[in-house]
Length: 90
Image (cartoon, rainbow, N blue to C red):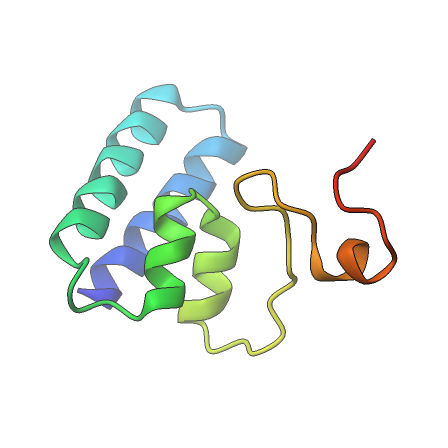
């Protein structure tokens, strides 16, 4: 399933770049379906990226990158912000 996910991600990011709303909607629907169908079998980090629509990070993960930046998920502060006492954001 991962090759299909990667192809859908690449198509989605290309459609975003080209402002092709029809393809964006179709690929997002496909990615949502992959997340549901793969919930029990996909790597938890990949599933996290798909569920939160962190598509660029999902591509990085599938590309084997190990230094994926930590970001805001669900409104939580990043690790750096928590360590610096900025639990929130301005």
